[in-house]
Length: 476
Image 1: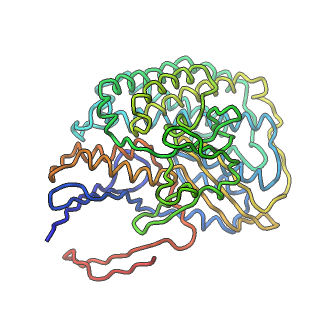
Image 2: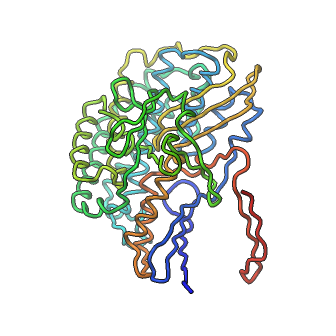
């Protein structure tokens, strides 16, 4: 009789939300299967029904304290579509500036607080020091600068929405208030330091990659499709753009209006996770796996429209020519290229003569019975899709969140890393940390990702005080 051993990592650390990993070993101690479980449930798609559509930007941003700006913007775009309006130019500029503030704070948070302990202190470092406190102790200058860079992004959000988390700013038809010239000037004064810190992060990453190139190549390096929004010139587009999907060699498969996403994107459910599994319909599930987020965006785009970030993208392209195009660890490098891009774009926006204008909102009633809002959140493509009745009451809501798009890929990454490092039943803490690290590369936000419509597969197991299974109920 073959003995199967199960290893459980619960909870996964240094990411937003609650999840766990199970790893199954055969009788020889080799990995046979792995699963990344998302164990929390958030039913926003259901309890938003019946609410007035104009409340959605405020309601849905409460999905998460890390991603509120992203949900607010995608929701506001969906509401604009219900109104059938094109928002004023100043409102458009201000929303894009808010978006860049979100990227700056989110990407800085991920590298300096969540990813850097693995890269700067080592996968096998003592867990007691392998955290942001340990980074502060060994790299105090980088840690402090990272905190200040995140704060700078938050200050952009606060200048527009009044507070750093859950701002009240983007609304159907525009935004709530204009930007003061004094706030514009104050924010413009912070760019030199911000650029310096971003370059510091890039230099640290490139130095680490050069020293650990073999591990980068072995660590969850696999072929997949990549999806991202692009403008008419094929440049990365974070607020507006067409949805482009390319294959594992960056050859375009399709490019379409995001409003038509249902023609190309399907969703699968599995009984062991509350997170759905989106896939590219023409290829089916799970072959139609595609990745989103920083690595996917730089692979899907032709170029970047700002000079500093595009120059760094050229360095990235040279690196991936060495057989590293699908390396999951390169999410970290791509994320810092995007951070540089967002700083350049934010500076451009703040120098735009129209940024402090006062024509910021159009008010009217619903003109359409549905609206779709799609943006690039820091973690990838975010979809808000609402249906309304003639009074503007929400009748249906569908959210496809960046972390959900990456679900197949994250499970694949966990499997590959586990099989690479765990052999003959030998399991050490550093090996398990690498498995967690495979998930952290995607910077998942699990709170954002668990929004099932209708009945999901569900299994309930009841154990007695001795730990024996006494009853089980399953719904398919």
